[in-house]
Image (cartoon, rainbow, N blue to C red; front, side, top):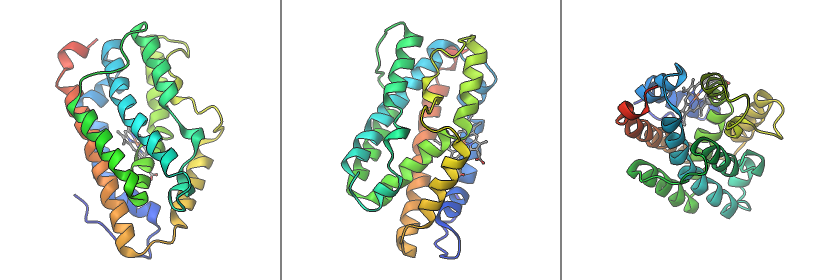
Length: 219
Ligand code: HEM
């Protein structure tokens, strides 16, 4: 694990990225993720992945609304990023109206961790960054793979369609600038970076759970 760098000379967004680089490459090379990107996961597997994420985004977006007036959280919280409705419509598409939910210890633990961040805007922004900046980056590539793999011609990939964010790169640049302008001391920055690492651990636990069901998910 990279040591948390509380050096105030480094922009916070850089510290967050550097602090999670190794975990990011672990996430990319997890069995489920690499099989998904190679087009070797079936619709059932992809739907279960969305079901896990639904739990996480339900928590993330509920806490976001609770903290919308907090001066730190409000710098990053933006309803234009909300994914819950999109995820639910994608699950409905891929499951033919089946259950939105799934039994998952990893998703339960992740959602609880996010909910606990309601008492800490610093921890909330760490979870916010980890999911939404990921969705606006590699997430968009995943959407293209899903479309190609299942020949869905734009159906069932609402998750990757940020309707009101025309240029993800510009949005991410603005987001990083807002992170970097937060008036945080070294200890607070360290808390944010440590929680980013915790958020990545939570995501890895989702992938571990999905990877364990590979036999059912392979196409
Ligand atoms: C197949 C899996 C993945 C691929 C292919 C992927 C790919 C990428 C790429 C190419 C970027 C850089 C974009 C840029 O420089 O603007 C990026 C950034 C990012 N990804 Fe991923 N990613 C994957 C999985 C994940 C996961 C599981 C998470 C965590 C939930 C995640 C979180 C992030 C974050 C937070 C960033 C922004 C880094 C920053 O600029 O601060 N990614 N991803």
